[in-house]
Image (cartoon, helix red, strand yellow):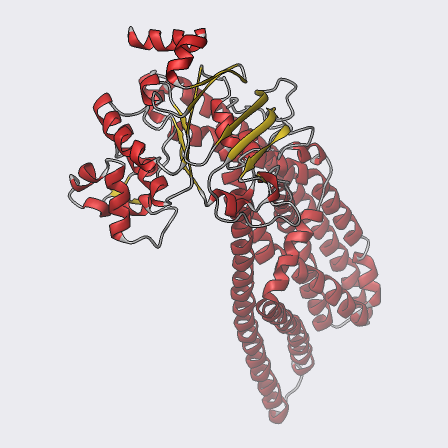
Length: 613
């Protein structure tokens, strides 16, 4: 296979890759965020409780200044009273007002808990759905997509980006609603209380709103760049951990550390850019708020001296004014979360909207049980729309039960051929047929479920040895698992572990040797009892003695199955029904071992070179 492109902007057949939409990051784009917010409708009952609780909490908070005004005005009127009944009435009012303040505070606290808890429940539900949809989409995307996209990029989008969207839905949206209710509710109360003082502070509000809108437009692309740099850092970390043995073997720790430090420094510098922007924003908001307070203090004092405003009304107005600028202060946090969430939502939906090159076509039918008749008809294949084909006009036929060996130098196209059979990729020209069905016309799951594959890189998953062997058939009995392990010559070494088949393997099978991993992978494929068996150099990681044992088992198990074998050693393909010799994407010779020795100089050269080593 071609090496994976390292640059994220590589395209497939002229179509932009996952990173292409970043060209739009210079302008704020909140459509993706709005799309993410619509996931809340799946949790409308919980979200409804949260928003209703928020309204009750706000109303309880808005009632307190009214009680404060009544208390102050009552006190100022009652200071000159001498009658006992008047003073008793004043005390009763003060007690009632105190109880009212405590009661509204308790009511606000109760419903504040309700809206915070239910908002968190709803946002966690949205995050749950997004993560599951992302994982499901990543599973469905074709190999060409994964060839272009770094693992670290996908990991950040499924974790950090989803969390930023969740934080906005769970907190930012609630704060935004709270801010607007406070803003318009308090403005209405102030206008009803004192129109002149309200008009004094009104000009400061548009200034603050314009300031926040401007900062929102600036910060959204800044947060997009933060996420890009975080993805780069995560990719370096993931690749380093996956290849830690290679790093140590080549004494590249210092070089890898320097690479990671540069990426971490880039991320830190981008965070500092964002911090500078917000460090300027918040003092600006407080300055505007203080200007409004100064104006109210001056003009309110004049009205008090003129007798048109009571001390209680002035205090109520001041309290409401503080509550008015409180949502403006929250707008800074809201815009910060919105900008981050918008950038993250855009990155999430880039994956969810990505088109897979290989998918079920409309009207695709289920592939019936196959006999294993495989035909390649004038197949040409190019990776990623490249002008240079990897396969050129390849045609051959494998009859049911035959063993087809693919032989050739690295890069000759052997792995590409076997990737086209289960339709990991689609042919650029020509067609691949199984039992007369074009593989592009049948459903992918019905095709791949009848093909057993052992890849050159034997990937195992965290879990037990039994789980790995039964990966394709989780319902398989223990007897069936053991039978597959015996056939793959894995049973004996598995019993050598203290826990036998319940032995847990390390990450990517790190606790097993290369030969042991390969035998477990062969057992996994054999348990499916497939009609087509693909072995991609599956004995490359074992010694000659183990290879001989595996080959004996495979020779028996291949009977009745159409088998495709890629091998570097000619000794493993001597008994093949047909050997295809490939060179630079073309079949340059075909036939059995004996006839190829006589008719193909390339095959004879490979054969004799291996005999002399």
